[in-house]
Amino acid sequence: MNGVLPVFDYTSPGFSLVLRNDPYTGERLDSPGLNERQIAAVNYLKRQGSISNLKYQKLNNAKKATATRDLKAMVQSGILRKEGTTGPGVRYSLTYAEMDSKRS
Picture 1 (cartoon, rainbow, N blue to C red):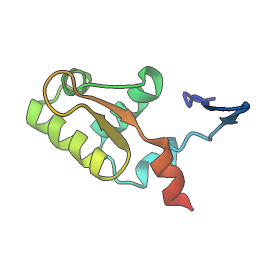
Picture 2: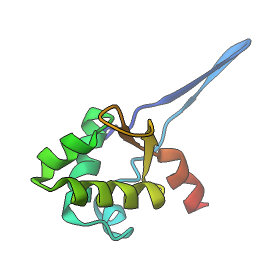
Picture 3: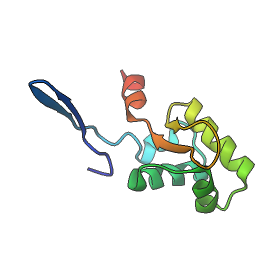
């Protein structure tokens, strides 16, 4: 499934299962205007699920200010969701739902 996990919604008396195509492939990564560091982070997120600012810095050999700027831009564009407010506990994950709504 190219790193895209199914979404389960459990309700009484049953559940629903949503399977999505991966919106973060090839041309789709080029179209939002992501730089090489950001594309590397998206590919990392597809495998790992979340990333911290420090991991982004290490992944891309980038300074903290660059990582912060890149991650903030991805949150503002709706590619990432920020979890937490400040410090080392902040994590970023892909936001598939926002990509779905932008296509409709």
